[in-house]
Length: 325
Image 1 (tube, one colour):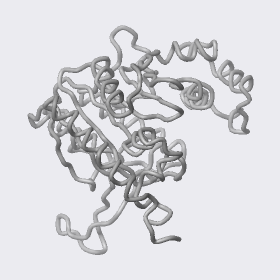
Image 2: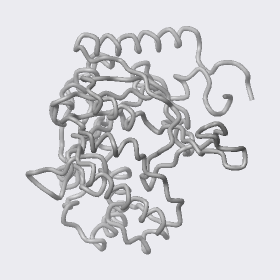
Image 3: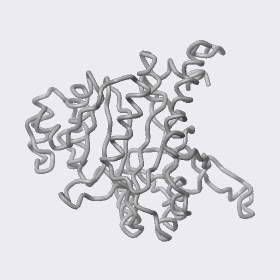
Image 4: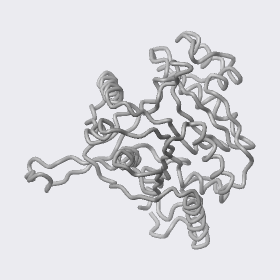
């Protein structure tokens, strides 16, 4: 294991200039930079997302034998929404986030995230703003846009909002995606996600960024359901050159519905043999108090810099990654 930085001084300076450009972008739009804690008493209930935990011995007079479990944030989302519910205007944050998953070309368990929230924006207005940021940082063309449904119809000739398990498994077979797990899988959304990642992601955003929007409602636990089509949520993702860059929502503001979705996540986790996660009560309380209408998005900064500097992987953009941290 080498003690040296994985990137040169030249690359470090280029990274700093890109971050300065991001901050300038938001400053020109009067979107204010904020900071929120990395440690939290609550965490995400997402079935396929795992957080890091640690123990703290000094909260509420807990003794060493009964330490409080804290979680490293997977994103600053809940805390930032608490700020919005407190009366803040449009805000952004550049910070560290942590996800307990395998490291690789596009993943490091500790990474840098850009997240921002725009009051009174819907997801289409926020897509416009993401597009403007990408054009500034990556000097790329205007992004393409496809609904989730259109993407499946265009590349796989199936309708993801109407498909049966049998049809989805046939599509996996036809596209040479195999595995013993497929025969046993009964979750439509799992099959859709595999089809998307294996068969669609590789074909979109090759020349210019591509937004995919209006995801199936079961794949978006923090987004509003579309009034035009209750089968989909007002969520979008952005892809460019084989990289998922952004994930955004027209944010759900109904605390009762949010509580129900978190509880549903935990029920699914239990069925899959995973540990139930504590629901962030402070976040739910903030929704109770009133989250204003807003849309928010998270962008992977290391991935953005990887594309801007034409590096082969995100590990080429970090001073130290998990292999020599």
